[in-house]
Length: 321
Image (cartoon, rainbow, N blue to C red):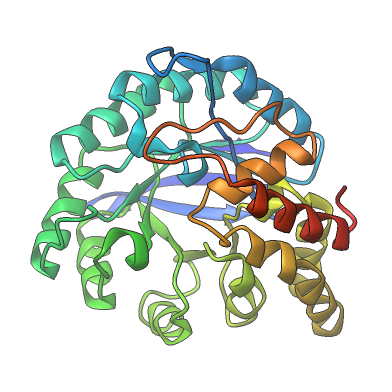
């Protein structure tokens, strides 16, 4: 059994297709803190490890139940395999078992995804988040084969990162069911789309043991209200206490309190997408003192002065600066 505060992963060796994995969220709310990479002045330089460590140390005493490394905020598509591996190893070392580490290991290439995933498993990551291959637009049978290939080679629990808007492909409920039937370690999905009917159908098909995590900030409340297990969000970097309170209120069935928190978080959640994420988020994290700078690798770029003023207004309105 792999365990840490708020999360337990049990391996039950009683399934025809191999071990059966049960992912349970215990007493603590499940929030994912997505670290941001900070770059040296030279674009050829390695990521600033200080930035990642500082970010985790800033947040670890808050209410997060896990740490996601190489999420969208980290601009993983701009990183080499070696850099992504280095950050996973650093996250495991920095966290020191206080919370589970979830490694985002997906890419366009099956070979690269396997390389990243197998390294993360050996490095000590507790679970993996694998995005649907982006740009390629594979058919459903291709997605089924891809995820079966990846997950069947892992011993740790795995989740699909389902983000049709950025990846350019959507994975059908039938495809999730097919992969799950072959890979018992597929335990959930991060769903970053506005399709609540899809979430309902997925829960109805795979049951409540299949953990769905809200990937769009403004949909955390409605998704959890219909049965999602928690959130993997960016706004938790900026306002962790209110995000935690939202989760707690929903779990307690206090929908009036949850509704109030939902609207309190709405403006800053929306601001994250004023431009392509993570441009606004990194700037706001800097302004809130979470990270020392908001550098990006091309083709990403820092926000304009006009955008900075707009983001500052949101942060002031929310009482964050």
